[in-house]
Figure 1 (cartoon, rainbow, N blue to C red):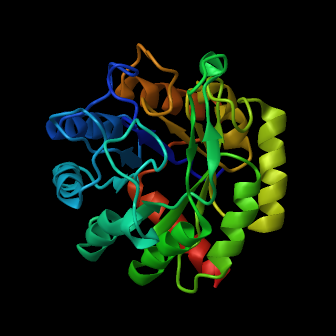
Figure 2: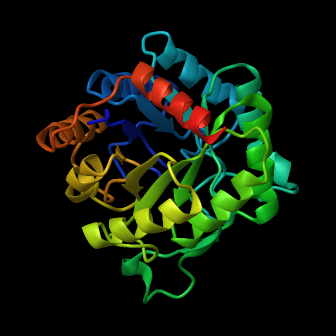
Length: 299
């Protein structure tokens, strides 16, 4: 059975008032990333923050400090987020041009600090079920076609892997079409986003994973994929993902708000579930080899 990749999403845009255990300071994020890597995570995803406000702040210098701090002691694949356009979670104004959304991604890629980048192929209404009866709550997470194209162009220029968050099934079709129109971009990694707390996409149940996989087989056959989400305990899908050749993301960005588990504990739980399903957590080197094979097969 192929090795299973475990990704740890360390924090997210929520702020500590929503997820008290998440790391915010550079040193905390580095320490949490190293702990997750030691526990079996081959891929690390993170958000950087303005220390004065505690809100997400996407400047490349802060990301570089975090990535270099982790890379000094681990060979995990580490990659940043992008501005959460449309929300008040992050301390970032609206971007005037599509390319500006990926300015920090470009800077990090030019310096050889990242191998993966967030390029989310579509816009989606973000509303929690517990906010549905409160007027004025929710927002549209914006990813226009022009912005998606700009992100894919950065990936093509620097041979950085696009990571697609598939909040709704149609994102798979749109992402695959835009990726085919971006010569030189590596094969995208598709993250199927499940949720219990947010009112988009599917809840974490096996029949819905089957639907995602059927569409992926039509739109992007052979592309790598993983189960992930926001406001969700994804452990119920780990066995099905392993059995069908997929991968797993866990961590305090994805966990239900108020999680009592640390990033290390989420990764340890995922690693146990992978082994219980007959799989084996991949090393960073094994992830890189598998991704290279995906690109070779798509050529």
